[in-house]
Image (cartoon, rainbow, N blue to C red; front, side, top):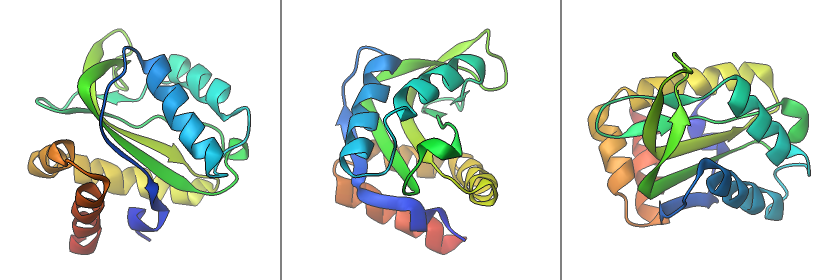
Length: 156
């Protein structure tokens, strides 16, 4: 399995601007809802889960977040990806007392627990490559990011 099978071009967004995590979540939820990927309660469940189990990862130059929520909120599996012109604060996964400015977000919508574990493992492997993360953050278009992600999946 590869993360590529869950990436849909219509859910790739580059160079977005938000003032808060809340605005970011609303935007990504709206796009996923329009595409028929999520149920109505996805946004509230995502927001609540993030408060309890934060998903920010401090990686140095470009920090990443991997927000996700319960499988029953997902009607069609997906990974939404967004790069941010102005980073948004996320509490850290490994220390929820700390925060990091995040510039790359992978919002997961997976409804199979086995897929979620495999996707998380593959994503963590990919984001440990600082050059790959920088390439994704620097992508100027949906197509450029899709190609960069496709190359990452093919190299595995």
